Length: 296
Image (cartoon, rainbow, N blue to C red):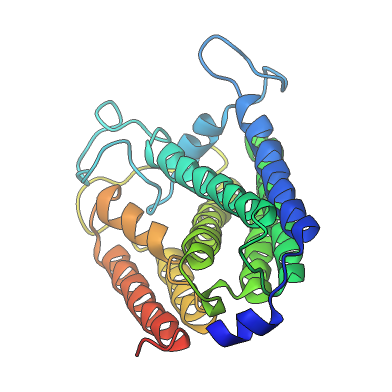
């Protein structure tokens, strides 16, 4: 692999620097949408009559929606465990945004350092466009989601579904695990995979909430006590994540499902099945990466 890069690699400064700017622009569009949402006494830039993201998430809470506390109890009451206010939303989003910005910085370093050789630089641009487009769609997601009505909720789901497909396209196009060294697989490989996985988790929740907005327009009810969470959607989505993570490979694709379902959701049998499926996907995908890199 190193010999291939030595003979075929060239600086291609313009393409790599363009990739850094494209990623940065995509993140900026998303952050602009985030920071125009209401917080505190500020109503944001959208009509004040619109419910907030937190209010919609609370209204249509799903069995696999993250709770506001670590290791929540199935018997917790809303006053002890408020709906729609989980810190994991901001934690995961911050990790994904920070990792993508770090990837853009690494691309900038590759672009300005004429000593470092860059292989298949055209793929940098294509993959960056896909990721930037995914972030832009995530920024648009706020508008229909905050409407809270069925047709808009389905539109919100479609936006995240397309964003996830764009992330998959970026991974397939770039193939970060096939590059030598550690920089590209550390930044692009894990970064794109984490982004794709978090968007997939958000799409699965939005899908469940879209169904709920049709069947229970007045909101879902939190059922107390063990044995109430028959979340087939989470199991099927984790099964898809396992298959996709192995096929690409994309080791971090099921990661957020494991984190959320183990730490922020009451432990129910169906959800634990989803966790096991996700862990199988992560482990098998790591072995595929090691095989691709010639380590095993």
